[in-house]
Structures are given as structure tokens and as C-alpha cells.
Amino acid sequence: MTRLVNDEIDILAELVPAPGPQVIELGCGAARMARQMLQRWPGLRYVGLEVDTIQHARNLQDPPAGMRFVAAGAQDIPCEDGQFDLALMLKSLHHVPLDAMDQALAEVARVLRPGGYLYVSEPVFAGPLNEVTRLYNDEGAVRAAAQAAVDCALAAHASPWREMAQRRFDMPVEFSDFADFEQRMMRPSFADHHIDDALQARVAAAFAPHCTPQGARFVRPMHVRLLQRKS
Image (cartoon, rainbow, N blue to C red; front, side):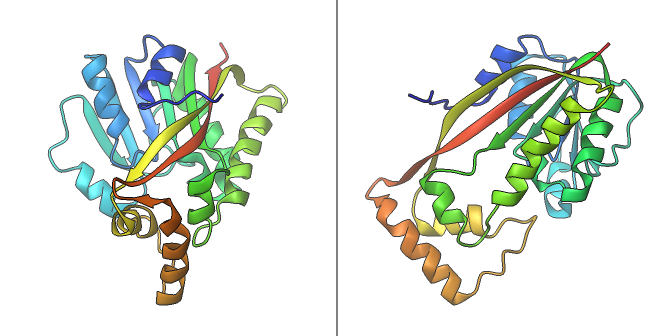
């Protein structure tokens, strides 16, 4: 039976018990887990990169001490070589343009110190929630490409990486109703899924069987890969 994990920071803590002190996240979104990390491991210094201008503007509003946000993508990291001890890619590698994934992983290797870690967490293209979301946003190709890019980076001649661990687990995802799902999943600030009335109706019909008086509950299968920068 696949392990159910309520909070992914527990997986990170198992794999990297003492992260940092210098941490970078590529495609940080709202940096939810990073904020938890600063509470669990005081003294971390964090840089979050984000290409979504709306989310980046939100991040710049009163960031906590120890956190800095930069508008940039993983394929062009505006930081010096060997600056970080840990890099995070949390459901973000598959959002990197397909022709830039290899460059993004090379950039992460550049900014990590020797012995530093890259924690890549990607959703698996499977499960009931996926069957609903793929009606308007089919990520089968990009999620496969993300895993292939990691494999390619590991297999490359003179690769800077070694793989230290993999973990597979499920994470619970809950929505109060379809309106909650639509707001959070169908209309993100970073993408336009071109939702018209007909498509909205199709997605609502697929979502409906999962609804209960307590809301709709799913699990999202996840695949984590921990890489280390070779010395």
C-alpha cells in the first residue's frame, strides 16, 4: 500500500535531515513549504525564483526574515556558482519549457556547492484527480519529459549528479466543492487553460461523482528524487 503523507516537509526531513543553510527554490509559487522550513530549521537563508508575475508580486509583500524572492526561471538562474546547499523543485520541473529542462538542471548544478542536494518532487500522471484535471490540462507529456530530463542528467557523460534516493507516496487533496476546485485548479494565475462554458460543464460532470456533503477528497500520487552534486 502506498504511504499517505499529509505534509511533504516530512519527506524532505527524512531525506535531508539538516538542509541548508543556503536554499534556493525554482518555481516557488507561494513558497508554502519554504515558510515551514524556516520555522523548523531557523537560520536558513532562502531564495525563491518565480516566473509568474502575479505570484511574484504577492511574494514581495512583506516576506519573512530570511526569505528573498527573484523574478527568474530555472533555466537562467541569476546567482553565483556554488552558492547553495539545497535546491528545491516542487511540482515545478514539468512547468519548465520542454526545450529548457536540460539547461535548467545544468543551471541548478552550477549554483549548488559540491555535495549539495537537489530535491525534485513531481506529481505522477495517474489517479482520479488526474482524470479530472486532464480534461482541461493534459500534462502527460510534460510530466514524462521532466522524469526523462532527470534521467538524462544522471546518464550524461561526466554528469555532475548522483542519485541518492527516490520516494513514492500519496498526498491528500481536498476541495470544499466544485467552485473551490475551479478557483484553485482551473484558473491559476500562471496559466490560461481556455475554459469555456462547455469545457467547464464537462469538468464539473467529471468532478461531481467525487463530491460528498463533506467535500471532495482525492489523493495525488507523488514521486520524489533526491540528487547530489558530485564533488
